[in-house]
Amino acid sequence: MSFSKIDKRDLYRCVSCGNCRSVCPVFEQSGWESQNTRGRILLIRDLFEGVVHDDAVFESLNTCTTCGYCKTTCPAGVNPPELVEAARYGLVALGKMTPTQAKIHDAVETHGNTLASSDDRRAWLAGEALTIPKNPEYVFFVGCLDSYRFPDNAKKTYKILNRLGVGLLEDEKCCGSPLLRIGFNADDLIAHNVEQIQKSGAKTLIAGCAGCYNTLLNNYKDVCQKNGIRTDFNVVTVSQFLAAHLDDLKNAGLKPLDLKVTYHDPCHSGRHNGIFDEPRQIIQTVVGANNFVEMASNREKSRCCGGGGGVRSGYNDLSMAMAKRRLADIPKGIEYLVTTCPLCYRNLKDAGGNDVKVIDIVELVEMAMENQ
Ligand code: SF4
Ligand code: SF4
Image (cartoon, rainbow, N blue to C red; front, side, top):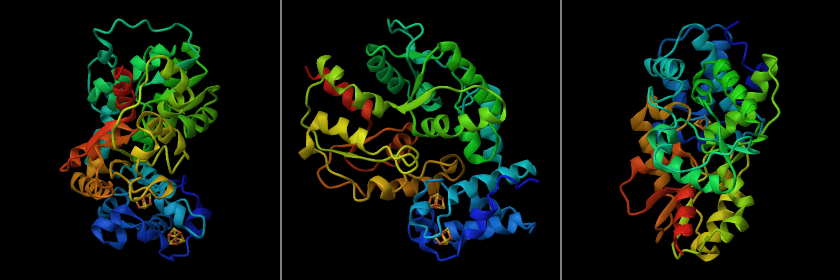
């Protein structure tokens, strides 16, 4: 059955109270009931019960960024982003998808990355005289966006990690997150990456992207179990790893910076997986507690950047409107907006239009390392 991934109990647990409407960043922009959590759930019930809808179904389901804010407000304990992903999966299984979904799927299937690039995934390493350790305990999982779109960030991150003995996978491919979030399966990609991880001998992956982190941590085990593949590795984010190595960074020359900084919590590392403290610990070590100011909404209540769940690719204007709304949360007097996910970085940077510079946390650490 096409909609077999939908958790029936979760679907009918919703009492249509509408609490979730108040926090849905898409509803905040569009105002349509079909584009808020409750409306999406009613639509998913229809699909589950065999009611046929026209293509407007995509405007409802595919505009969800899977930010998970709705989940935190639901008195019935529903997990709406999981239902949305399961419904997208059901539609795709019936051959129903938008051109954007098909394009992302073809790019990843053909090229092993979301950018449809045939370039060497490790081109960002060119010209760097770095020794990549053999049989390391940790490997850096770079991700598609940093590998192809933000090679400088990949390089800066790995130069710091390399000092701490971190290796790389020989042949990394897309983690599978973009496919899973928009309704496809990613079994082949996952099997490939797991084989690479086993070949590296590493016990822990360090993910450079919140989407990769969430997928490697929460989807790999299930998919591997289903396919009889052994998995025995841990996953951490770059910020978790660096926070655990702050003394090493200080010994390597990390010095305080006099900058006013705020932090944007990526939904897939923050709200979905509870990583709130480590990025703040790094930032406060670099700029001091008094120079760090929280955004108007933060931690569990952080507003989404608007880039996730395939929304940036499929609904650019909506995505930019959400990013602009997020930028409005920046407190006065801030010089740098720090984040820890290349998707958030791209969306917030592209939405621009103010005096605050958007940077990855690694850029902040690098500036502090150069401040000697
Ligand atoms: S808050 Fe929960 S129960 Fe209420 S409408 Fe939203 S999903 Fe349904
Ligand atoms: S996951 Fe985010 S975008 Fe999707 S319905 Fe919930 S609040 Fe709205």
